[in-house]
Length: 169
View 1: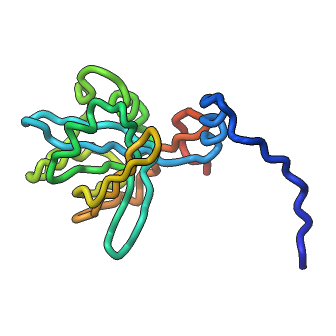
View 2: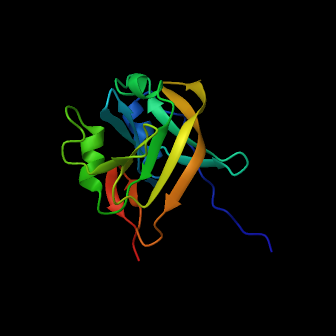
């Protein structure tokens, strides 16, 4: 059976980055915290670009803005923690995406190797940097997973249409 697909009139990518960002916002994604200890203090960022890449070797990826002032601190760490934020952790997401003391109201733990994990997350990954690639105004960072834990009872926080949301039903 052949399905008839209605014609779609695609538009060229607009010069206006807001319009492109609006189109990208149609794709929902989870939100992850990328964190490590820096001089004994936690440092971290929130990323909605966390993606599973490979089972063998176990790889995940995250995209980081080149203008990030936190990434230069994190990129030199031997281990990085990735916490997949749970649906009740929207305030933690906002704190990690903001300025100032991002961990002031974030409960976290350290693994002993410098990896910082956010308490109450849906999943945790202990990673090291596998490769970093230039990708336009971002850096695509591939991370090798060394250890992980998932709480299947926790639902993930979702970023969709530029808003933090919960999965429906």
